[in-house]
Amino acid sequence: KADTRTTAASLNQSIQSIEGKVVDLSSSTNTTMALFDSNLEMLKADTRITAVLLNQSIQSIEGKVVGLSSSTNTTMAFLDSNLEMLKADTRITAVLLNQSIQSIEGKVVGLSS
Image 1 (cartoon, one colour):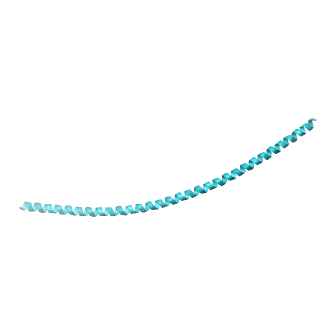
Image 2: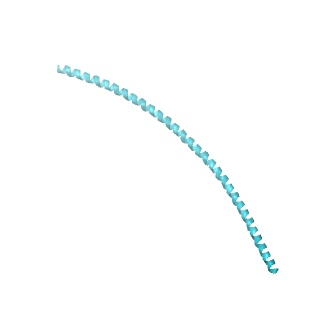
Image 3: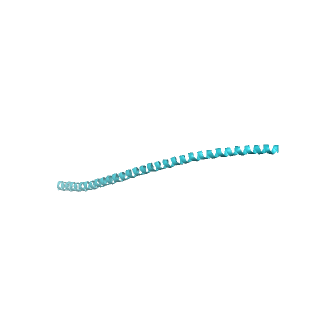
């Protein structure tokens, strides 16, 4: 009887100790979950901020691409205009050279005769 009472008391203490550890573990788990939830919310907020910043950067890049495209179009129009003027100058120069050659040929013929 005495041994049974001692064993029962010892078992009871072990059960109470285990119950205390389960309560501590539960409390620790709740704290960990609260911390995890808090970190998750901060991560969600950071992700939203990052998405907004990325979107702003993309819009800025798109704006620069549009500006570059417009600048390129202006440059191409300017180059086309200059090319047309160069073609016209070349045609005028060719006509003047042709006239000079004919004049020289006339003078050579006159000099020859």
